[in-house]
Image (cartoon, rainbow, N blue to C red; front, top):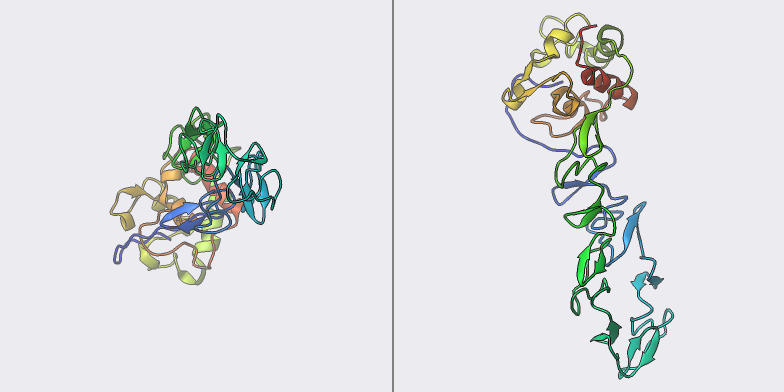
Length: 290
C-alpha cells in the first residue's frame, strides 16, 4: 500500500486496456495513430476499429492500402487498374487531363473535399478526419490532437480537450462525475477487502506494519480517510471523500499516476474489478465510517 517512507521516485503506468506509446497511454483498439500497436498509423481518412485500420466508405482496400478508385492512377476505377505514364485518373477513368479538377501527380482531385489533398496537393488530412471547404476537420465531435472525440462522454477529454477524468469517474454531459451506486458499508464491504488483500504475512498489520500503514479492519478507516500520502510529499490524500480520482489509495490499486513504488497489492495485478468498484463507490458516497 502507499509508502510512508523511502526514496521518492515518480513512475506512471497505464490503466487496463491502454498501452504506453511514446510516453502517452493510448487505446490501441481505436487510436488511429497507434492502431493495434504503437506507431501503426492508419492512412488518411481511415479509422481504427478493434485494432484494425478501416478504409473510409469512399475508398477501397487494394493490396492492404486504402485507395480512392476515383483518383488513384494505380487503382483507377478498380484495384490494380493502372493508368499509363501520360494519363491521369479522372472520376474513376484514365484520361489525358483533369478538366476543372486539380491535378496532383497522376490524380484528379477536388481540393475542397479530398482527404488526400485538402486545400492543396499532398496536404493529406490525418486519419479519421474529413475535408470540407479545403480544411481538415471532424465530421462529428471535436478535434483533440489528431482524433475526433465526443467531449460530452470521452473520459480522456471531458468537457474540453485534455481534461481527463480519474479512476472511478465517468464523463457525463461534459463533466466528470462520481459513478457511485447503491450503499456501501466500510465495515461490512471495504474493510474486509483491504484486510484480506493487504495484511497477509503481516505486511500492513501487527506492531510494525510495513511503511507504517496499518490496514487491519479496526484501524484502516483512521489510517486512510483524509490522511495525506507522504509518498507524494503530502500533496494527495489516501482517501479524499467524494473524489475517487484524487484518492491515492485507488491510484495505487489501479497503478495510475503513482508517485513511487509499484502497484498494490504486490501480486502482479490489482484487486478484482468488483472489489475496486466497491472501494470506488464507497469513496464516491463520501467515504462514511459506516
